[in-house]
Amino acid sequence: MASEVLRIGGGAGFSGDRTDAAGPVVETLVARGGPAALIFETLAERTLALAQIARRQNPEGGYEPQLVRFVGPVLKRCVERRIPIVGNFGAANPRGAARRLQALAREHGLHSLRVGIVEGDDLSEEGGRALLREHLPQADAAREIVSANVYQGANAIADALRAGAQVVVTGRVADPSLAVGPAMAHYGWPEDRWETLGRATMAGHLLECGAQVTGGYFADPGLKDVPDLHAVGFPIAEIAADGSFVVTKAAHTGGLVDSRTVKEQLLYEVHDPAAYLTPDVVADISEAEVHEIGKDRVAVAGIRGHPRPATLKVNVCFDGGWLGEAEISYAGPNAEARARLAAEVIRRRIGDALAVRFDLIGVLSVFADDGGRALAACTPGEARDVRMRAAAAHADRARVEQLLAEVTALYCCGPAGGGGVRTSLRPRLSTTSCLVPRERVPARFEILE
Amino acid sequence: MVRVPLHRLAHGRTGDKGDRSNISVIAYRPEFFPLLVEQVTEARVAEVFRHRRPQSVRRYLLPKLGAMNFVIDGVLDGGVNDSLNLDTHGKSLVFLVLAIEIEVPRRLCPNGLPTQRPNKD
Image 1 (tube, each protein chain N blue to C red):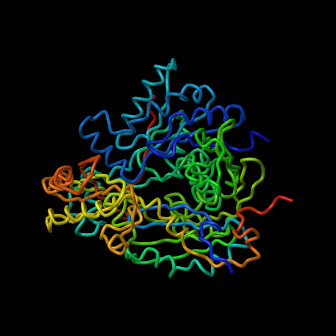
Image 2: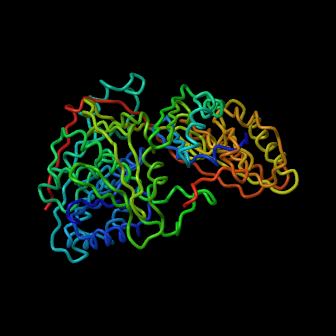
Image 3: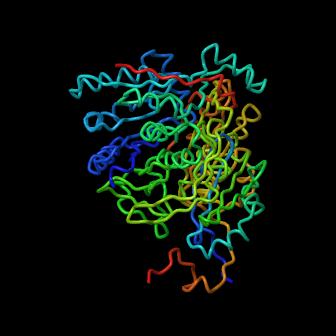
């Protein structure tokens, strides 16, 4: 029975994820003994723009900064046990990541490593920019593009695996495609088997955020308790030949997989449940069901698939000016009134030069709005530990720096007892997205021996 | 009837893409789901986000999961790269929805509060 399913493990759910999570996943895949693959998802909407900037500063850089920490602990074991690794850790430089992985293989005593490089996502060169000028709104088409990447699908990943890649490095691909690729290669699915691809896509969707399906990002003490959250295990999907699957997790780890964790992640970042769009398929979970079939084992049934979209989504990042943030704390009797006065002082000092957002952390902050309407409607209370935060963004760095200087000056010129000023100034990226015809942006792969 | 926060009846998670937020609301027990469908409407969710002036609130029902998915446009002050919010993704927003008060029949609240999981017989 064990050899009848393909097991795909999730080794990372974002660039900042734990680097000791993949080890127990790989050990579980090895112990179960059947065919298996390991995926790493490390690219968020803004990560690629940062990588593009890094590559401009260093042509060998621009791939996932944690690449070695993610892959190093498991590379040798995976190669020896024929468990292919697929990751979008190539970011803005899949070729650079591939060379680094080959060097890493040598450091671990492997004499060779066949790395598949999937490219075709980067539209920041002239040809890509010309295409974007046709498809972006006019106002955006005139702006300075920092990065532009099209979401590629599973086909090129599957092709690279069929060509013998032991590791596949991609730039931007749709997150679920990282899992669909190995399943396509293993089962030989044609690219129009929609129902099957729809199921495998949702398996990939459940894996792509790592612990978010195994009890991470879930605990709510007293209502949703999670055992050993400090050691939460990462997920494994057991995918059958028809794409149907069971979600489970690495053995001997914390966390849990039950109907609640799976439902939360199934709907995560989904809009219309009948039309979850990826480059591979339109997946449909409107009739999906989840069944707890054992401890930490959940089967997901009823997923359907419809023909893939004719267009692919492109994420475009622009220079977004400067973001400044500054905070100061007030505590004890009348703290909230002093924090509110501090905000008022800043408001009058800055005037119309800058649109400043104010928060009163400990009273009202993340639930409020940039326009200040929620805070204005919030009746003053008697909070006794309040941090006043001021934030603003502008193309002119000097104006933002002025805000930080004004908050710092509250030390001597503001209300009584203010302490703990912290300020930060960062360049900001602004993003938009558009659709392009898929035939204009073909993906390609190549094997680096 | 007993008034309880939605938090006692349902759980959920926020996701974001650009300036669009999606918030799932998942009933802890199947018998809670009709209460959610009746009371956690698009209008009530739009009301809790009124300060953010969303362009639209759309609710999708997934009865087989005992779940609803809200898709709210224009609610993230421009999205992760443009918002001045500390929580640029709006990840905390599901708990704004879970604070909505729900009227629950007494028979579902044996000890004054609804229980999340049925007793294992």
